[in-house]
Amino acid sequence: MSGLLALLDDVAGIAKVAAASVDDVAAQAAKAGAKAAGAVIDDAAVTPKYVHGFDASREIPIIWRIAKGSFRNKLVILLPIALLLSQFAPWAISPLLMLGGGYLCYEGAEKVIHSFLPHKGHPAEINPVDTDPAHLEEEKASGAIKTDFILSAEIMTIALSAIPDGHWAWVGLILAIVGIGITIVVYGSVALIVKADDFGLYLAGSESGAVRGLGRWIVRVMPWFMKVLTVVGTAAMLWVGGSIVVHSLEELGLGGIAHVIHGIAVSVGHMVPENLTATVEWIVTALFDGILGVALGALLMPVAKHVIQPVIGLFGGKKEKAGH
Image (cartoon, rainbow, N blue to C red; front, side, top):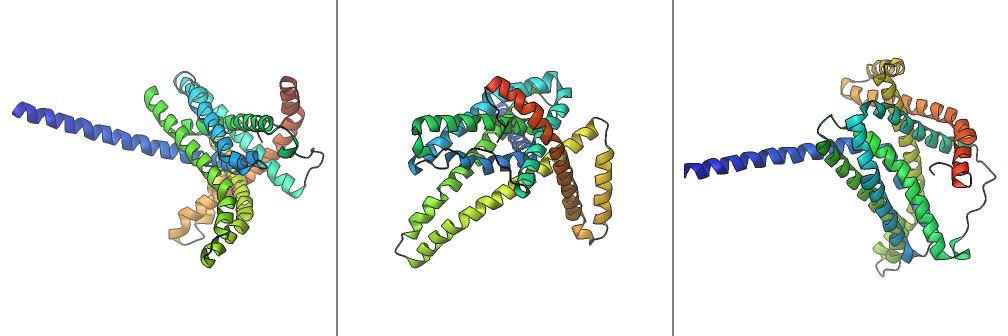
């Protein structure tokens, strides 16, 4: 009997350790996923354009196809690469983070600058009804999956940098949870956003005045919601991109910019009541990270236009912007 009790006690101990490990994995995954917020919001903001103009019955199948491509990008291609980096070349993570941060800054700065100085010369998009729908769907989905690969690489690299050193299986499990969770959140949100208009129109046909009013409100609000989402996505890209570059420079021994921003944030934080100090310091830090992101992105725009895009054109057969 005592042996059975001892066995049960051991089993209970193992269960507690396993439960603690699960909680720890979940906590680390949540922390790592939060670090990738800028790329995640941008991904959700840009994806709906890939189903624009298609028949409503094809919207969800296209989103599901892109989501499957995103799962493949993160779990089949990028996860093994991330594990190899973490085990054999951890020194490469900071430079890769800086590249990813620079890309976010470039994307965000381009959107900001083009919102004030609209650029001309781009050909009008082809209306899906004017060409073969199956071919266009294939083209759009393939383009979206390629764009997702870039954003997924940023997400996985940012997440990897937020995970404490540990066994490769531990790191791999956390990265897998981050990849799966973020993909579900992004493309689940995209599906809801894309179908919101249809849902609003459905409600607008109701016999109930209150429900009909709600449906009309949804239809009116969605265009504004998309604009707000785009603005938030751009701001998040600049904040996260600038923050990544600042912290990566600090890890490489170049902490001057980080110290200046921290000093300003602390000085401003001392000007407000103590219960608001931490919040104000965070806002000031994020603001300066974003300003740095705009400046760095603006500097990278000529490089992207005159160096990167021509190189991509040589391999891709035409000049395309790397990303979206």
